[in-house]
Structures are given as C-alpha cells and as structure tokens.
Image (tube, rainbow, N blue to C red):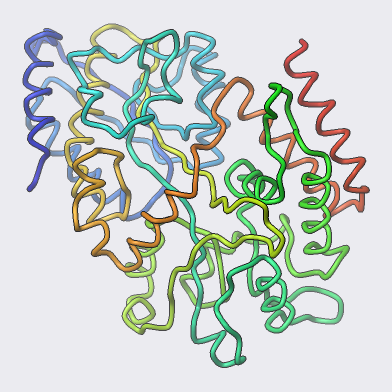
Length: 411
C-alpha cells in the first residue's frame, strides 16, 4: 500500500476547500533535523510532490537536532523562519503559547485517523497546530557478542548496567577510554524523569507542584553522580553520544528508538545480519516502585504563522503529502507515524524487536510537553550535570532545581 487511503480522501478534500491556486508560484522552506535514511526518502517524496503541485517549490534545509531546537524559535522571532518545520513534543510549547504556529485547517488532516493523544502537545484551546510525523520511544540496544565474551547476562536493571559497565569499561590511567554504556544526554525528560518515577517521584506531584518526591529525585541524582567521572567513572555528558558509536560496535549498550535498527542496517549491514545485537526493555531500579519505561514523544510538522496565506497552505499540503507515506517512513527509516492503522499493522511487529518497542509503549507515557517544557529540561540537565561534573550534593541539587522551576512559573 503506497499511500494511506484515508489521506487520499482528506487531501482531495483539502485541495477543494483550501483553494490553493495553481497559477500562483509558491516557494517554501522546509527545515528538518538530520537523518540520512529519511533525507533520501524525503528527497524522493518532495520531488514527487513538486511534480504533483508544479506551482510549489520546496527548499529543504537539514540541521542537527540541536540546531533545530536553537534556530527555529530564534528565526521565527526574527521574522525569517521557515514555512514548514518539525520539532519534538517537548520543544513546542513556547511557540504554541506565543501564537507563532499556524493552526491546521480541518480540511487538511483527519485527526480521527491517529491514536488517542497524538495531538495533545499541539492543541491549545481546542485548536490543533501540528501534524504528527513520528512517534518514538527508547529501549536498550545490546551488543550480545560483547556481553557473551565477558560471560555477562543481558541487563534488566540499572544495577545490572553498572555491573556490566564496570566489567567492560577500559581506562588510560584515570581517563575513561572505552565505555560500555552511557545515557542520552541532554534529553533528560526522556530518560531521567522516568528513572525518578521508578523510584516514586515525578515531575509534577498530585498537588500540582513541580519536582515532587525529594527522596526519589535525590536518589536518582546520586545514581548519576556515581555513574559519572567523580564516581565510578563509567560515563559523562561530555563524551560522544553512545547511540552514534553503537552501530560501529564501539560500545556494548545504548538507548535508542526503532529507527536505530535501520541505521545499523544502512551503515553496518554485516553487524545487522550477524545476530550479535538485540533490543531489551528500558531498565528499572532493583527497588523500583513503578515499572516506567522511557517517555514517548512525537515529532510534529509545524507551520510558521508569520508567513503568507499561500505559503502556509503550501506548507500544510507538503506535510499532508509526506504523512501519507507513513508506510514508507516505517519500512525505509524505522519511523512510526502514530496512525491507528499503522499501529495495528503486522509490519511493525515484524521488524526486528518491533514487539519490544510496542510493548514498552504500554509502560510508557507521553513526555512532558506543557508550559516551559524546554526550559525545565535544561534545568534538569543542570541538576544532573552539577552532581556528575561538579560534585554538588544531590539533595542540594534537588532544592536548587525546584527553586529554579518554581521561578519559571512565578515570572
């Protein structure tokens, strides 16, 4: 099935209702984060789109994930931002609340085709401002061969991760030379908040207060402190992302999404076909009080409200066109669009360890995407890195974090 039938109907209706004149030439900038396999797919799809809509010219700009987070808001504020772009759930609230995003016309997208909650992060006062592009959660990728050679079992807990790391890490004097695992810095809402939740804390408490459960937060921070260079020296936020070197078999474990499988297949096919790797559930603490997996998140197609009506219409047409090819995003890139039909397809579970990712979603929850989400993530990062790199007492770091988050909402 090359395109989803539901979207064909919606797009046809959109053309009738939107009234985008094919006599008016429109040039739109589309900014997106780097992903080699997706870049190849989207280059082909954009070419097909331009043939189908010859009055629209698409200029695609590829940035790193960090550059997208930094440059999109600043460029929009300066009045020179792209027409169409994508951002993850936790990086959207400031643009949403500042009226920087154009609402999605009901004629462009049928929200009933998507899973429940798919539009939560881009809905304000009942108005939808984005189209879901990819739905992601993280599990633990494991190089089985490395563990087998050392006589180590597959990890289930964070304590297991420490044991494996201590057995496999190598050093040049006191300098960590080769790691066995490391965390996905700086995405602390994705992995660290779930670790806190496993211990009984949460970002938002039952009374609505932020940084709930001092003991849980302090314990999770103490774990990170012991993990870092001032503790057992098993990893650090200053080092290369573990996910980027797992594919080349330079590290035993990493956290990543379903898309990682396609990246292994593309850049190291012999490893992909070797049976030397596997995917296991997101670890928990031995004394966890809640079985919580990594937070799930969605990248959304978003349109700049400060562009002309014809540009906005063309942007939503491109977003709809790309989303129609959800099956190709899954097959070729390993990206899961949160459509009800796609979530039910056997082709998801047929992918290597696809069942693991689907089952982990059941013990996951959406990442925090409310007011100041981006700023809160940065503040959590400061707390984690202060205990890891500066030796700050975890309890003091919790108090400082709470004060900083409270200040955000008091301004």
